[in-house]
Amino acid sequence: MGVTDREYRKAFYRAVNLHQGAHMMTEEEQFERYYVPVYAHDDGPAGPDLVKEMATAIDFTVGGSVQLLSGYRGAGKTTELMRLRRDLDRDAYVPVYMDIEDYLNTELPLDGGSLLIALAAGFVDNCEEAAVPRQRLVARMKTFLDRLDIRGEADAAASAGPVGLDIKATLRDDESFRARVAKALESNRKAFKKEMHTFFQEVVAAMPSGKTPVFIVDSIDHYRGRAAVFNEVRDSVESVFSTYSSELALPGMHVIYTVPIYAKPTGWEGQIWPVLNVKVQERSGGDCREGMDLLRQVLVRRAPDGDLKRLLGDQDDRVIRASGGLFRELFRLVSALLLKDGALPVSTGDIDQVERQQRSYAAAGLTEEQWDILRTVRQTGQLRVPRERTSEAWTLQALGYVLRYRNGVVDWYGVHPLLDKLLDEA
Image (cartoon, rainbow, N blue to C red; front, side, top):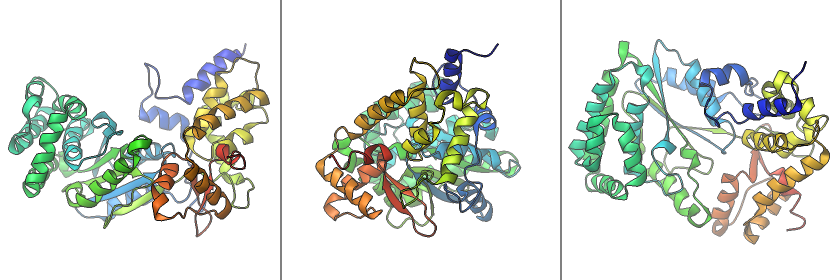
């Protein structure tokens, strides 16, 4: 006897919402069960295989390197970083992954001092694979903070247990601690950098068998802030990566930072790799069949028994097209459809309702200036605006309402499909 519609919906819903619930799959389990090689073809709709190129850059660089991975939220950066961790030569490298949102509030402007302290704490917290005795790293972390005279209230919990857990809470919740860190950096940047790099040099020296750490710092791309402070948050990210580029190049290791699609740090000398949305439409307006097929494979891998038709019937192209080629948007649409209580496959009325809900959410709060930019993008296929409208344009791109598609040699821009239908009315 086959599974009921409700059981099918439940299993499918959990497969597209892997980070919810008490039991979450390991990264290895996620990769084995669900990964689709969207970058298998260099000239494909997702672009070149950036993970392969990043791994090559690491292998070719003596000592250490620093790279930026930029892109839209929901474009699949974290998934590709998981693949990088998996593909690294473990005889030569030790991957260490941290999520910056565990340490800093991405709704607030980024400050250099807090980021640098978070990197040290995050490395200590997440270096299980490095096989370095934890207490040795904790002791080094305490020494680092003591030399800068900023440990303060972090001291008690650091003495009692994992230092990073205390610093997580302190960085996120204690404004006075962040102020002391900022003061220490501003008053003597040279000493701050020396102490920080000394900490990481000692950590690298403690690596087993002389292996080199590959430190992956994820979720800096989540720095966007709400509308009222977007400009301040955007400027802070670009300023930190422009001003503290030498501090962020950690000695003796390879570092990868994920940054927002809008980030263009002045004078940045390292590689910046862009992860864009999968191309689901051609510039002429027709479907990009190869991109549509890739995203269909992504859904098929998650559907119970690979049966996507049971949910969508012959409407799979419509749903994929409406995602704009962003994985997160695709999963959001499918999740909303799975929560409907009618017979399967879902009706066109159900899809109409879900699209209307998502479209209303996206359109809420857009300014007349932003609608003008969207109209221009649709007409020209480019994102070119006067200087005074730069912040509105970057906001639209950060939200995924303006998408960037690969088209041979020259990329082009398009409006998110759900908003495109409103442009004639706005």
